[in-house]
Image (cartoon, rainbow, N blue to C red):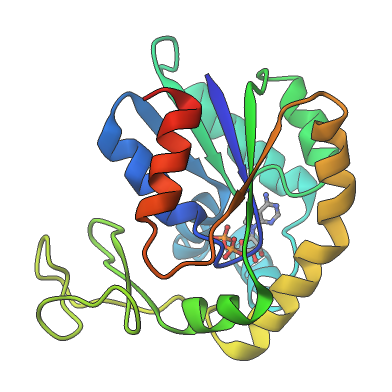
Length: 211
Ligand code: ADP
C-alpha cells in the first residue's frame, strides 16, 4: 500500500507517520527529511536548496523528484507499505509519482490555520532519533532533552514565524489542484486534526487503514 499524507505545515504529518511506524510494516519517506539531509552535505546543490527552504518556497520539482526517485530505488519496498510525507506537493509531482508507483490512499489532514503557527514555533526535534516534541503540547520529561536517548533537542531553521507564513502561502497556492487530482481518482479521505492530543486522529486512521 502506498499512502500519501497531504496537509499544511504543522498539520501533524510527521506525528501521524511516527504513529504508523510504531504500528507495523511501514516505510516512511519524507521529502522534507531528504532535502534536509542533502542540505547537510553543503554541496553546491545544497546551498541552492537551502535558499528555497528558508524562503518557504518549494524546492524545484526536478530536484525533489530526483531525490525521491533515488530514495525509492535504494529501498526494498516489495513487502512494505510506504508512507509519503510531504510529497507530492503539486500536480506536477503527483504526475511524476505515477510514473514510479501507484497511490492507494490519500489522507487529507486538515487543521485550523491559527493552530499551525503555535504547533510549528513550539516544535522541537531530536537530531538523533527524529522524535518530534512540542514545548506547549508534548513536553519532554527533562527540559529540552529527548525522552528516548537524552539528546539535546533542536529547532528546524525554517520553523520561525516569517518562514511559516510563507510555507502556508506556498501550500495554499498548490493544494487545491493537487487535491482535485486525487479526488478525481476517488482516493481522498479527510481527517480533521485540530486537537492537541492526536489520540483520536490515530484511532480514526487505524480504523480506516484496518491496522
Ligand atoms: P512542512 O510540511 O512543515 O513544510 P517539510 O519538512 O515537509 O515541512 O518541508 C520543509 C521544506 O522542504 C518545504 O518548505 C520545502 O521548501 C521543502 N520541501 C519538502 N517537500 C517538498 C516537495 N515535495 N517539493 C518541493 N519542496 C519540498
